[in-house]
Amino acid sequence: MLPAIRSPAVAGTFYPAEPDALRSQLRAYLGVAQPAAIDAAAPKAIIVPHAGYSYSAPVAATAYRLLQPLRSRVRRVVLLGPAHRVPVAGLALPGAQALATPLGTLRVDQDAVAQILRLPQVTVSDLPHREEHSLEVQLPFLQEVLGEFSLVPLVVGDATGAQVQQVLEQLWGGPETLIVISSDLSHYHDSAAARAIDSGTAAAIERLQPEAIGFDQTCGRTPLEGLLRHARRAGMRIERLDLRNSGDTAGPPDRVVGYGAWALYEMDNRTVAPDDRERLHRIARESIRHGLARGCAAQPDPARFPAALSRHGASFVTLKKAGELRGCVGSLEAVRSVVEDVAHNAWAAAFADPRFPAVTREETRHLALHISLLGEKERLHFEDEAELLRQLRPGTDGLVIREGARRATFLPQVWAALSEPEGFLHHLKMKAGMPDGHWSDRIEAWRYTVEEF
Image 1 (tube, one colour):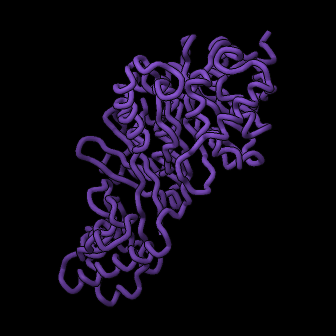
Image 2 (cartoon, helix red, strand yellow):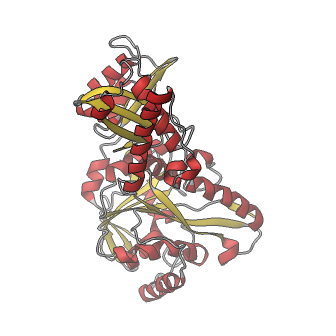
Image 3 (cartoon, helix red, strand yellow):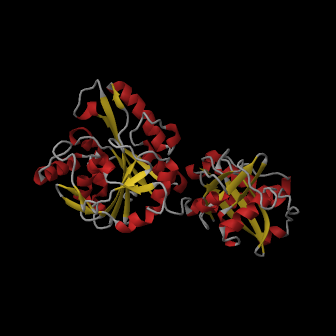
């Protein structure tokens, strides 16, 4: 019979077993924590270390302190950490219905369990949870700052970052759901070497580039990769809160473990401010007028524009006349500033789209102009066409496919006309010049999101 409650395994060793002593210690750590200067937005996810409290709790507390204002908002915590003691295939949920700490019990969210058990990489097994500390040490902190909430605890073993990302996206939810990733950094170097390694790891985390992080740099690399992959796709913002090692907190400096804490924030859908949207529309129309007068695109100086427009970015510009397409040209790679890319693509949509004649001066008064700014492309991994179709998100994903020299893309707006993944992919393959019904194992695919205005 499965146990109803998973008992604490490291109470009395990693943290105090007596409730009052534990509560007092937690409040002391939270009271002195000094998080980095951030705005008032609520974190959607945190990354925290998981060693004994005397070593890592001063770092973890800088993240947990940010959660105190969310006490009445967060009703569910999705907690992922690495397997240290028992090999795990994929991600393991406990069979227990609740997890206990000296501060009380936390109910396992059975609705969420049923939801993700449909995924082949998720199983139920109490053994990996029985003595695992990477999840347990987070629970008292969560109880102290959030009070009552349900829990989805996952020990991550032999899995891919994409598999973890899929689980997170199933459970992402809204403001009621918090994501917690438990991971330490480098292990058992001297303090100077650890600082150098952990500094590089921190930079990769903050660039949302898990592919730049080796498995010897973090013990929770796989759950970390899953979060960073989603954060990159969703355009999340990340803030470093603390970066130290055990030599800085409670241990000797000759053989240390690295600890870091980060908070991740969801961005408003309108990531380009209204004034900047107006600037881009003016640039696009000026470039079309420049094309009529001089036969080439305008060349705006990025240095004269705000950072959101002078950074490198990829865009599409779509022209419509009386609701019908009149031209559409774009970039799939961010090779120049946003302002330069929009200026070039507006000119190209008006004068260089091979499907249409060049726009005339008279027509410019009747054109509607749409700008789409592309998010970073995410490579999709699949064994066959059916698996690719299952990964597509209608209404959300733009898609690029490539086979050799043949390549094509559909913006997410195309879902309005082709609402089913099968039809969407079928017409995209036709656009790329692939034969009807064609499939091969050489086909590659990437998805992306856009901000359109």
